[in-house]
Amino acid sequence: MQPGTAEARAGGGAWYSPFDDRNAAIAVPKDERQSAPTAAAIAVLYAILNAPTNKPLRCIITNEQVLKNITEQLTGWNDRGFHNVKDARVYKALLSHLRAHGAPTIFCKVDKKGNLDAYRGSMSLAEQASLGIDQSLAYKTIKGQNKAKPRPATEHTIGKVQHDLHVESHVTPMAEHLWKSIRDPELPQRIRDFLWKSMHDAHRVGRFWKHIPECEERMMCAHCNEVESLEHILLECDRPWRRLIWEMAKSLWPKTPDHGSWKEPNLGIILGTNLLEFKDAKGKSAPGIKRLYKILITESAHLIWKLHCEAVIDHENEDVPDKETYNRLCQVLSQRLARDQSLTYKPRWKTSAKPRVLQMWNPIIKDPQKLPLDWIGEARVLVGIGPFNNFRQHPP
Ligand SMILES: [Zn+2]
Image (cartoon, rainbow, N blue to C red; front, side, top):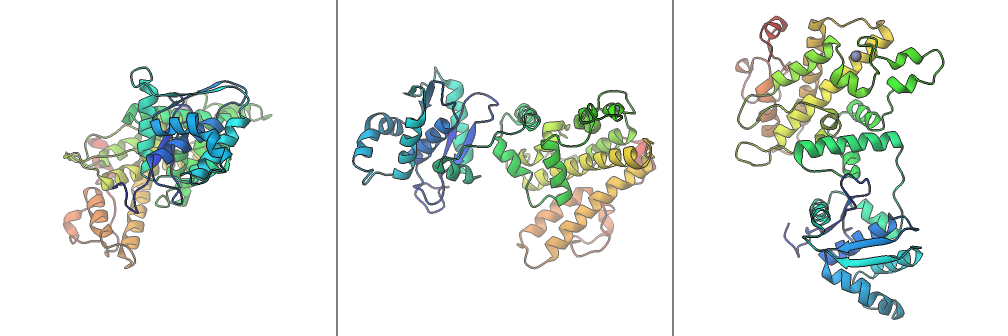
């Protein structure tokens, strides 16, 4: 976005250390001045609010103007009632919280060589924030509301997801962005619920049963005799449907230069799939490819979870026949395809969506040669990778 236009958004980054839950990308709210100094001042305010009040705080600032404002101007501005001061609301809040901070606070200018990690971390966060991802954090910061402390189990999962995504894409998403990504209205409600519970480690599996009388044995996977966890169920268990579903997802991934190679899932990729970026062979952003991956990953993981629950609750841990597993995945994916068809067919959808939907699904629909090029209005378009027996004889 061009600076100085109505659409321009400024953003700042508050960075503490790698994987610190307090690291935040903060977009400047629309009703504040959209400028780099405003963003930097809000980031400083956020850093003070989230620091322990009884410990000295060393605040490294990348914006020279803001450093001067805080160290040389703030007291004088206060004496004059912040008259004609740009970003007065932010600086008033900053002064009030600085005074409430019980231990000494030191402000210094960033030294790119000496604080390379901090410099890179805050700049990358500021870049994310300038995309205007979430302004609610900035509103809360100016109002002086601290973030609520998450549960330890939730923090543990978020840390794991951040780590996995960092390994995959060299970007560590903020916890706020992870939560926002699983609220994506494009995901069906059942998937959103599943991801939300998974992020909170709130499924009744494994250690949940440890202290519940007469249920202790449920802590172990009845199939592998290992401690059960969501990660075990989705990614490690020897249940036949787990392997088969991931094999199918991989085999459905189109083998084209644009799609690239299949990313093997891990817990971070499953829970944070919406934050992964995909590029085509020319290096251009590829939202259709990203969307296909997101659907394959979330539907596969959700079906593995569902089959696990069905086996434990209704079928005394019996295995599901492979052919049934195969048909179930084809069925849920075909339902997602039908959902896209019905949404795209409605005139209220942007016309640009139709080619994108066609292009996204074309590589994985059943018998495309028997369908017209524009099959959006056609009934019974299915996802398919051929008959089950062929798949078994020629696995990916
Ligand atoms: Zn198992």
